[in-house]
Amino acid sequence: MEKFSSTDLIYFVDLAGTFVFAVSGWLLASKKQLDFFGAAVISFITAVGGGTLRDVLIGSTPVGWMQDINYLLIIASANVATIFFRRIFEKLRRTMFLFDSIGIGLFTILGVQKTIDLGLSPVVAVMMGTISAVFGGVLRDTLVNEIPMIFRKEVYATVCVGGGIVYLLLGETALNNDFRIIITISVIITIRILAVVNNWSFRAVK
Amino acid sequence: MEKFSSTDLIYFVDLAGTFVFAVSGWLLASKKQLDFFGAAVISFITAVGGGTLRDVLIGSTPVGWMQDINYLLIIASANVATIFFRRIFEKLRRTMFLFDSIGIGLFTILGVQKTIDLGLSPVVAVMMGTISAVFGGVLRDTLVNEIPMIFRKEVYATVCVGGGIVYLLLGETALNNDFRIIITISVIITIRILAVVNNWSFRAVK
Amino acid sequence: MEKFSSTDLIYFVDLAGTFVFAVSGWLLASKKQLDFFGAAVISFITAVGGGTLRDVLIGSTPVGWMQDINYLLIIASANVATIFFRRIFEKLRRTMFLFDSIGIGLFTILGVQKTIDLGLSPVVAVMMGTISAVFGGVLRDTLVNEIPMIFRKEVYATVCVGGGIVYLLLGETALNNDFRIIITISVIITIRILAVVNNWSFRAVK
Image (tube, rainbow over all chains, first blue to last red; front, top):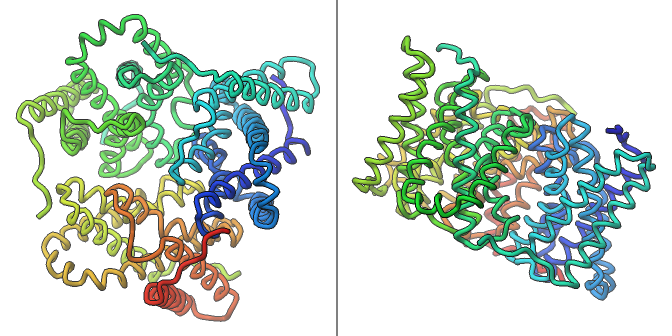
């Protein structure tokens, strides 16, 4: 499998995903009438929770956000932006679903890549990609005592598994790394929209 | 204390314990009418949750199941077996208690041994053995919102503490390693059966 | 910033904080009528939970209490002391607030110092100090299903953030290390008492 060096795109994509997740955390905290401190904590945990669990499990410590102050700065920026432009963000609340989909796409790719770079197997990489993408949101919803109702959780995670596999398979092609990332995220967004529109879910174990 | 090299028995015993825990996770998920994805996640967490927490705490990362694909394969096999032979497993549900006891015995021993091998103290080793054995089940029950009613939790964990101490004490004897494992598991199973039959518990702190 | 070598004061302070937190855990477990095993577990988690999460996140494993048997001995001593002198401790329950404040002050300082010693940034150090101080108590309250009512949680954590910043700023002065610790703890205790007396809280995000 082709080795994927940390390009500028990967780094930009990581910060963008962090921003999107931080905004979604603050908006949910705001809706739940938490104070500023609580909203900042929820925003932070939403943004870095998934990557933190991934880093702890694969032994990449101190965990990622500790080693680059830009992650904390981007979260703080997201918080300030949400405070000032909250009405705009709220009008966009229906489109937050799209932002959230981009975020899980970005984080899936980063989790897969970081795990592969450590020499672990592709199966483990897809699992870690999924954890990177969904665990921050799971913590966010759990901490404010909200069960995500708009989509079935299993589809949410399954989309990441599918996206992670697509990303790994594209690594076997001659495709440019940037296209590889863009295609994977597009696939994830498309599947999620189809899942919500068609109310997909899986049948219970009989 | 005698150094215990990873023999074939230890490895077989680890995979067998993983299989047993994966089956118990799937059966509980099935009883709770989770879908296939949910059942696979619960089964996986039940099987590896305890060992994962132990590995993170003692700093043995990437955690164990990531470094040997056989653990994921045995869990997948357990899931397929439970789907096809669920009726047989369900008829055996009363005997699942025995399987669960074997599982916690195996995982206690492995947790104790891995911690001792890192040069940590026997007291810490017994604690890590207990965590290895019980934490997967704690996560399983918590995630499906079930409180274990058949036995008092404290007895459940205390059995592991006792088993871990027995295992360490046997290490001071000239006993063959295989016998050491078999005796420890037998002790754990016996105490657990006695505890359930006699409805043992501990008095509340006055 | 001046390098702070582990002096006897730091070590004594760490053990004292562990003792105080272990007592508070046992007393709450006792109030909730847990049995001895449960009380010991809650006491242990209260005492080491915060430091354990900090060590896992910064990659300082095996986690601290595993590498020095004195931590387990001091927790066991706290448990025995609480059993024998419970009535005295209960009469002191109103002053447990003071003990708890000293505990979070001590643990904040230790978390900040350990993170700085690893070469991580001051911002991360203050975050890790706060986690060290509050996470054991969060776990304690969550496990016995109690929501801390006497003070607003956000003030609780904010006090640690403030104390951590004071401690780091004092490191820029020529102040003796022992005074630095004493001043920081005094600041934390003072702010907490003022917060409770004046019923401080933060306004909700509008």
